[in-house]
Length: 325
Image 1 (cartoon, helix red, strand yellow):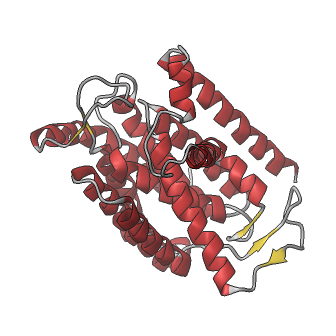
Image 2 (cartoon, helix red, strand yellow):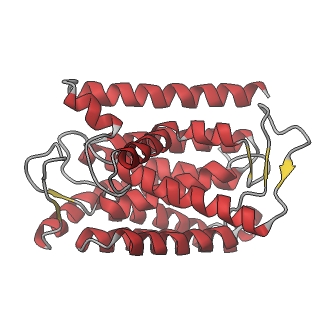
């Protein structure tokens, strides 16, 4: 086996193992510090559950990237060192924002302000929408977005929108972590098919980190991701959806939305429904798809099977489409 490939495999195993081993300690720490997700009329669980799980995902992902930076001196890493460091900064910032919200709820408008600031940093140094195409593949032509304002507007709205969509979909045990495993593996395959090894490896790191956490979040969950974890995953997914292709930031908007179909469409539907009912878009309720399935008598595990099957089917269709182009 090629030494470099063996080194990457070791990093992925380390990320999985570190999350798997550190999560019980985080559960203990969360209980000791009394950091719980408290049941209410919207939530399925009846007893408080530790909500610091995002810290485990952050640890696994960041430790894998640090191993890559410190021990891998290949051209692949050296050429992308600034990108990797800025990725770490944005992920730390978005996790910290969500973690503060876990400790003491932040007002929706202040939360949005900081999300836009972090999305702006991401737009400056990580990914920005630079063009759009509306065919199955990029070919050689696409609609270039020359306006800096439009590029900024579309990119930041997308990033903040996905962060909140992912946060809202995290309503029942196992759902978000399972979806993230499907999404991250899909983005990894698509990235490698598009000759984008950096994005492919970042997605594999997220996949193995989430896989290490899966056992503890599987219903009945011993720990939840919390806002810190869902914000982190949301930032990762929003950036990955824009950067997996042949040219980072040149997207087919329909394909991008289809890749994150469930959380994005569910968020848009719920927002319009709240506005129609003359309620704040930020007003929490049980109108999300996963709650509607549960409230109609569908057992939790069957509900998860339905949502995972929909997501997996769309992901497979996207991969097959990419293979044919």
